[in-house]
Amino acid sequence: MTEQPKPVQRIGLLLPSSNTVVEPEAHRLIPRDGSITLHFSRFRVTVISDDTGSTGQFELESMLQGALLLADAKVDHIAWAGTAASWLGFARDEALVEAIESRSGIPATTAVLAINSQLRKLGARRIGLVTPYVAAIEERIIENYRQRNVEVTASRRLDLTVNTDFAAVPEERIEAMARDVASARPDVIVIMCTNLRFGRRARDLSRILNLPVIDSVAATVSACST
Image (cartoon, rainbow, N blue to C red; front, side):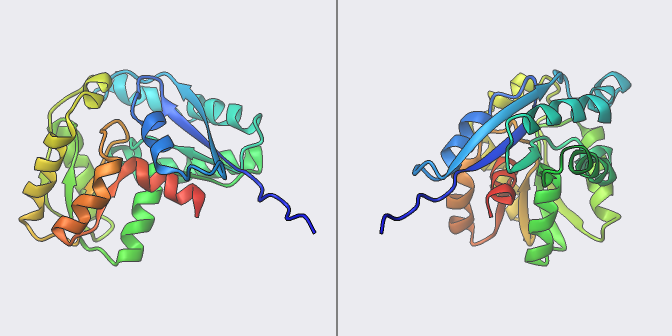
């Protein structure tokens, strides 16, 4: 009897328009046997700062329209591969997921919800935070986690605002930042940004430090493929 081929799982990822990391990193993170395929949609985001022009880029309706284009491809999961809710509030992503699922009937998640799910599974209450963002955004992230009874014990940031500059940060710089926050003995290190290129090195660094290292892109892909 001929063995039937396993069905291919299609993952749809919604990206900021200026993100250049998610596509290549996500392809490196999926199996090479063709059992998972990746499909992408975008909406316009170029600058990440604490002013109203930046936060206005993340309006629900524009994000939803980009996500619903993925539904046309009949993907099995839709994920918003961005971390804006880490500073704008986790409820933003919860509302986005509810809207995507209601309008498309397709299971949905986001990078931040995937990260938070991993934190819960690990029982993490102390995190080391690495971001490319400015101080005001970092402070909002820290406060949002504080409200969830999660303490940011140490943080390192790059004070960048142009999204394409995030993607140019060398992996070695990101690793150095992660090692710095590890000295505060957190339960977990979080690389909070899907436009920082660290997905392939996070697992290796976790083994070296004997400490979980959650990369935003890796968390997103994992949430859709498990």
